[in-house]
Image (cartoon, rainbow, N blue to C red; front, side, top):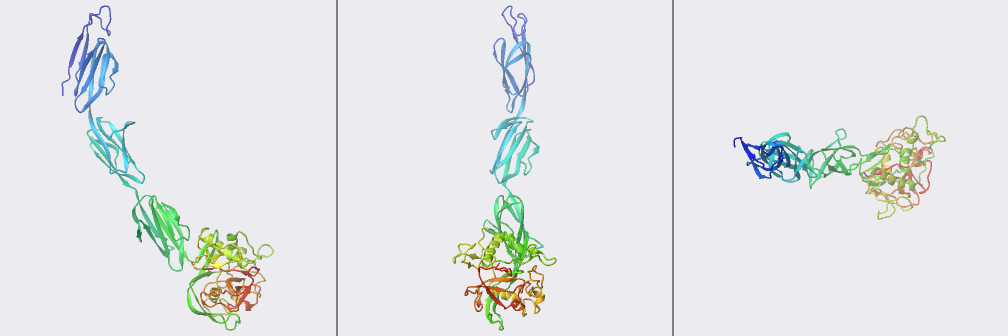
Length: 539
């Protein structure tokens, strides 16, 4: 360090009668240069009335500020400027301060983002700044690319004023020595929890992504926007109820009843699945139930006292059948209208019975086929491939009208029961004459107790399988053609005869028509106020 001192320069101006810079001709002006620590001031050029000065800093320092007395700056002289041109007005004094500077460098470790710096509001372009004035505060800003975030900072030297912690996007550093700032980015990841609703836990769920399957939860460190496929498997006699997701979003699936869902993970995500009894369904606000019938082999149907239904052997795959006859409210919510005769002020329900829960009637066999497909679409989606009925034997055109009907029983959609399915369900695992009892009044509405009208379903006792009104109330269409005897064998379907089978009797029939083994035929295109339907399916 040089000691501070003064240098004096005497200027004699020889031009008579002129005032130079405020000095009289015969009175010389003095110029004092105050020596500074950590640098030197040089007089580079004497232009008579103006003087050029240069400030030269020692290594590790830069020019700070200029101070003058008895003159004015013509050029330069700003803070940090190395030169100054000064017009002298009187005895003149000049001094310069020099300030310490440090090297600052900053970079990104490992990529996946950028690191910028601001000196005040001025962006710093270079990643290495060789001269930053002591005590300057530099703001560093980390910007991650998509799906990445700040992991941690490494700051060597200086004083951290704010930020700079793991996950922070900024750090402010006061420069008190050489400083190196580095930031690392990491891929954004989330945790995914999947579970089965504890109150409806009759099933399991697995998660699959990147070729791996996970049976247990949670799955951790899932990169942002990963697509995970969840597959739900219900226990026997149950089905998927609903999906509940928190965080993330469904890309596909996830609707009530669906067994799979693809979830896009864009935050910590939880997926919960509930399972419900397999026979529970709803359309809008209308719900209905189906009962499961287990598979059987070589059982006997028919009755020796029934001429057109002699004992015969059948085997049936597992199927489901409606707990009740199709109600007017279900038909209307699916088809948009109610064709029933027994409705309105002219045909009111009895007592406190609910009108909408009376069985639908005045529906032809073709009407019922159309209804089954439309109900399937309502339950499984308009674009479903689960419809049972088609207009061609190749099963390429889903049936919606016409006289050609083909049944694909491999589908999960709703349909009419076959005659064998209907009769086996009507027996209910019991040996009664009627469906559910030896006493008809206990289980059926027929001509002796119906007041000559249909009644709300489930008002009488059920049979052994929990099925209502399989004797009485309204006749029920079956899918089979009506032949002289029912079809036998494995999952038989009657195909001979011009009429279609109806079973069960009705509100206006005598008791003999309500015997579980009684069978009758009816014109395929005709409807009746005593004829409705019951659903079946293989879910």
